[in-house]
Amino acid sequence: MSNAWKIYMLAIISFLVGTSEFIIAGILDKVAADVGVSLSAAGQLITVFSLAYAFGTPILMAVTARMERRRLLIYALGVFAVGNLIAVALPGFTFLIASRIVLALSTGVFVVTALTVAAKLAAPGKQGSAIATLVMGFSTSLIIGVPLGRVAASAYDWKLTFGVIGLLGLLAIFIILVTIPKSDGEEPVPIRKQLALFKQPKITIALAVTFMWIGGYSIVYTYISPYLLTVTKLSEQGVSIGLFAFGIASLFGSKFGGFSTDKWGAPRTLVIGMLFHTVALVLLSIAGHSPFIVFPLLMLWAFTAWSSGPTQQYHLMTLAPEASGIMLSLNSSVLQLGMAAGAGLGGVVVQQVSLTSISWIGAAGVILAASTATAFFGISHQRARREAIKLVKSSA
Image (cartoon, rainbow, N blue to C red; front, top):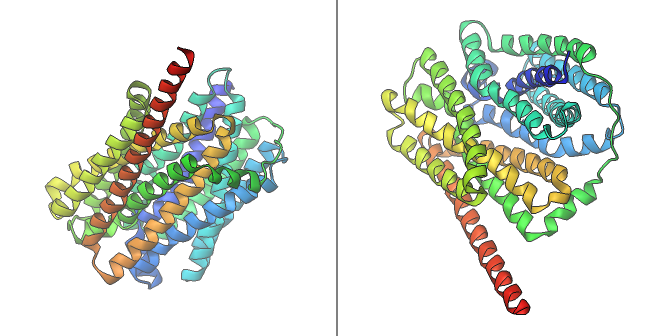
């Protein structure tokens, strides 16, 4: 088997792992009804997952840094299967929270390790494409995994989805054993060194943009299934179609974000993307009750939201090219913190205000991110211009 096929195998398993993360938003109303908790309480399952991912992954990666990579992938998938088994076999909301924590930690370790393995398997100069393939596999779970999970939960039982994912996780262990060669671990990067990057204002501001942007997105996405059912009044089939349309648009948005960054640069792509993201959420607030209008709005929202992902990753790597790996790890953690904060705030809004208010609050978060990014890029441009003028004067 060629290395390209091995990378695709990792991407397929990343799709499975991604489905376990995103699926909960697609079946949130069914989980809440079955477990006997409110929608806002069920939404905290996403908060718990994101917090465990954000804080646990960097620590576990530092602890396991020297471990042989294939073994680490297998261990991560073994724990992943156990996390799904907990959701299926043990009753009650408490065990469901435990399941989300176990799944978050195993997902984080698998994704980060798979990215490093894919980069090692790639031909020289093709590391970027290998990483993009894995990211596409992970994000494809939005297109196929979440809608399929919704259909399965509607036709049978939401626990069935976790049971199937757990069994496929065990199959994935066998695939890793057969296809992925052994590779050495790496020197651990101390947590202290990772956190030291926060002392640089430009990095702190850029990560704050990630936090606000994904937080605004998460406030709405966490409760999108109940929103489509109760506000838009879609049928079960309509919700599944809506989630599928959302996933397709997110893939195209991610691709466009990468293309636009190469062609027009990160500042323009990021700011314009977030402005249209805000517009999409405002339009969803105004016209989200219409079944005919909600589908194009969902696609506009997904396209604009996901266009910012690759752009922001590239931008952060340019801020600290000597520590690009650490920057991507930090961005991943901050992204998960933003999702946790968004899901938590969304729960408060749903409980204390109304389900229809979440898109307004989400839009406020994204426009705050766009404003911060605009100010940051403006200051950076002025500073670069002053330095260029000084250089010209000094050489004259």
